[in-house]
Image 1 (spheres, rainbow, N blue to C red):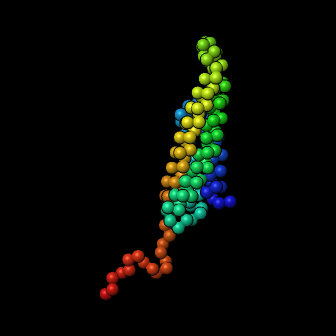
Image 2 (cartoon, helix red, strand yellow):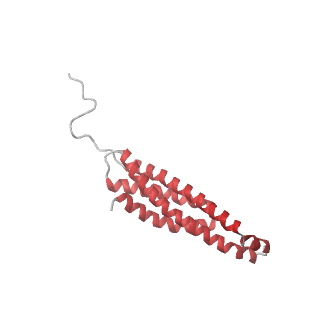
Image 3 (cartoon, rainbow, N blue to C red):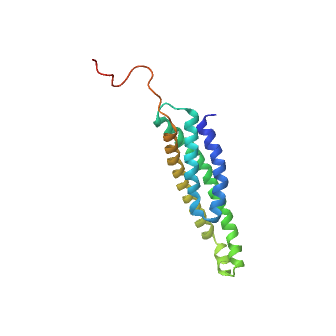
Length: 156
């Protein structure tokens, strides 16, 4: 298995758990986990693959970040659904019976689902971009050892 896929899956599984927990408390902060997960997976993938150029490292990092962000999207969705399911009973226990009536409607669930997907997709994009940046900075450019220099030294 290529390191870009391996680290995307490993970091993505951790991101899944963290994003689910974070999105249950503060849903809009889920992409912060994706930001960190994308950068870490991209950096680790580029380091292990030892690619020749930083552009290749950025490509590998973007793939690892996209995988990690896609898995974090599932965590965002899970955390949001759990919040939508639990929130009406919490509000009712606080004495807000009106909220219980609103939460039984289709609009409550549809609006919550659309919001979760939008926030999750922003996390995927964030993870992809930071994965590319991590891969770029995680790649050490190879030294030219062939003797063919772009600018040979001047003749004396």
